Length: 499
Ligand code: ADP
Ligand code: MG
Ligand code: ZN
Image: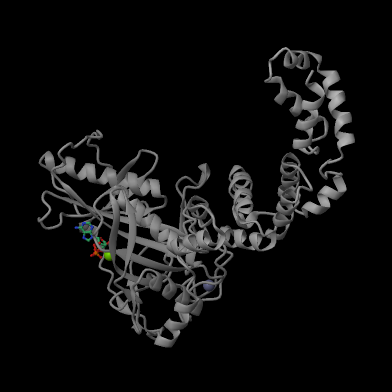
């Protein structure tokens, strides 16, 4: 099993255009999302990412015999919140089951999941697809534990070795299964993205696909006519980016059409996306399909969810991104574009709202966050949570600019200092003597010195080449270290330069 032979299909692949597409694609997604809890689903081990291998484990999540799982209440709350946001029906009773299969990273020999009686079913996601809004129905949403992680041949001397890290074993997941309502790779990617957006906005998932907190299996089939029964499907496992979801599905659609139009048959099989070759490759066929021998988990009582409990969670349900967007537009008079950017994550929205509360200037605050804060964070590959500038400190900087105490160029310098070192704008301005220079006498001294030092542009200006004006103002600003009031500089330059 470990080194499951990968049967690459050697059929040459051409990106065939199918102008009068004779086959219709059908896609269903299975999304796995890690629930944001500090401890695992059935034990107290930490779920934090990036710890040394096998340091966040205990007898329960290592599957020792005689240990007992205890259900994490927080995980259930998150799962119910997700179910409510996706408009699923939450069932009063759901049952954990053992799903048996052998794999080295599954120490118990079974995964605790939900099967016949999932936590929730039904529901839907509304997606802005390539051709308008579409509603994709959900089949079910259930809770389960994650498996460990196999590290195949991590180094040269370990090329033939597989090491296993059990830190992820027992991390709480929800699995969200869509109905086969998706008919293009682009719509599938949009659907996955929408699910991520909802889960992240709710604060039940961190949306981090690189760390495996969110991943997607894509079931794909094609059939000749709209009314025809669904074709045989393949399932491509564990795709961890929107782009790859789209590319893997598109590859699968074209591969299947190619097979069918050249006299072949699609095999029901599990496939893997190989991002380096841009292809899906066969992992195991139907003949190797698992019989999971599900049985109700005898060590866990059925999960009973009262209506009162659900109502309680409904009340604390965080607003969905589009509602937050509308609210930002209404409450702060922001353009829709700004509201869209500021609702990329609930952390970012919170940062904006805390900053506005202290700055009192919504649009300037939005501009500072969209341009400077996000620009610098992106450049450093950081997240809003890594930012050293507190909302109060950013608000302080914005107040200094809005009140005219410092100039725009000075504000950028102060921002950079705050980005690197933290601290308050007032303190940095105070310590650096960076307050705006308003004194006309002082500015005039600087202007005279600059004009004297730049006789050529001055002569050019006087000869009618008016463009040198901007240059001269720029030179005075530079001489003042960006601190002079730019309007006064311009007025005084004009007064002294006009013949
Ligand atoms: P399986 O029993 O193979 O796990 P399920 O019925 O549980 O299949 O469905 C798994 C996923 O596959 C769901 O998202 C479902 O919408 C999707 N699916 C089912 N049949 C097809 C099909 N013929 N083509 C594409 N997707 C399908
Ligand atoms: Mg299934
Ligand atoms: Zn544990």
